Image (cartoon, rainbow, N blue to C red; front, side, top):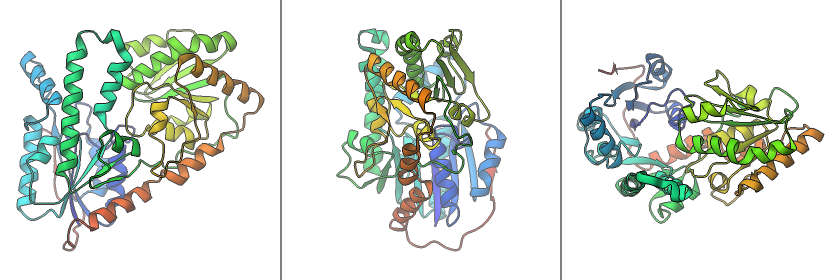
Length: 411
């Protein structure tokens, strides 16, 4: 089958939020011809395209507007808040997608991204499988509620963003012949369970995320994630400023390690505190997870599936997290994940203290977490589900080509 794959962000490196599409493309490429059209940001590099090329018949990338004028920045902000009209790189992506569809070279479109909605709205004549993935509008509203009286002048912009995201999310689901969600929780938040939708969760490469050390670390608390992403920034600052003071009263030797690229100034400042390390980008996260006594993720607003939790569980590290993060790991059958859930700061601190005491007595890794991930979160099963959906959406395609037909560089 000839699949036109459209994403709002390039699916490499796989530490990015688009690792879901890296694994989908890699799995589908074994039996399908895939053309990828992707928006890219300023951090995109040629070797990222090289990493994807073996899985693609064709690849084109489209840079986002990086102009620095006040008018351009305002226009970019408005287009993100209300993504209705295709402009800049998105307009070029839509033009190329229309040409491919008109040529008869596409059997089905696999679409992803809220900000890419103008491209979806401008295409017709081919079945669409849309990956709605998470309900980002709910995450924005959670952040508003958590900030409460501290919302300040941003409240109007945040409310507009939440409303625009909800509008786009609903239209993506209605426009698609079938839509995917990463978790049952997110499908429920959009009230889309009665429509043509499926839950296809993320997976974990359990061969990669595997322990090499037989024991957990001592008095070591770890949090991982992209540290300029608002929910992660909030979780890191909440952990250090509001939860750890109580933990340190009982475990003054306890160390917090915040692992992830692009830490904001507020996160970097946390690293100046006694007992806190901010690593920045690291070549391999696994050694930090192996050295942990417990993984702490006090995420106060979240949507989709938290890959960081799946990875920690696969590495057999005990996890203490918030109700909103744990809810994304509940299976479609209702199976709860084997993690410790805590909401209030004092309760979260008590749970961390309990894990530190436990590992002080017994450093045996937490095997139920890995067993749960292995049983429920597998990339091969996710790809099998997608292939079954694609098979029902388009007729058999001509013989597949091979190699890279065309790679276009960003302007």
